[in-house]
Length: 58
Image (cartoon, rainbow, N blue to C red; front, side):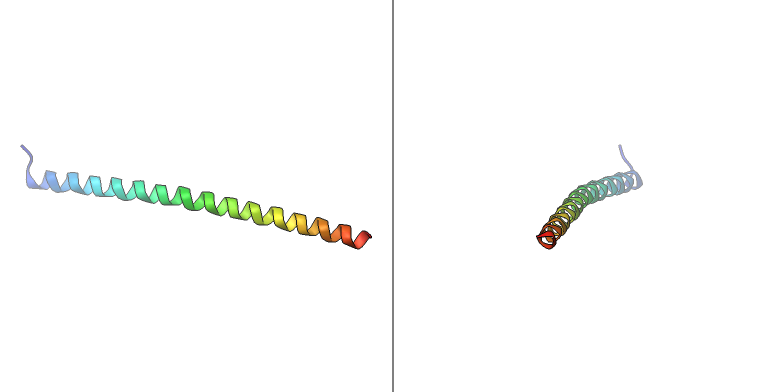
């Protein structure tokens, strides 16, 4: 059977694996939220600039 040190090593491996999984899950969600928000802000700025240029022409 397993010795106590092997059991602790297995628990440490599972802990690191679980932390890595949740960190990856969080970062994927955060990065996609960040990219979407930045893109939306850039689109809004371009629209506002275009509207401002059109209002100056008339």
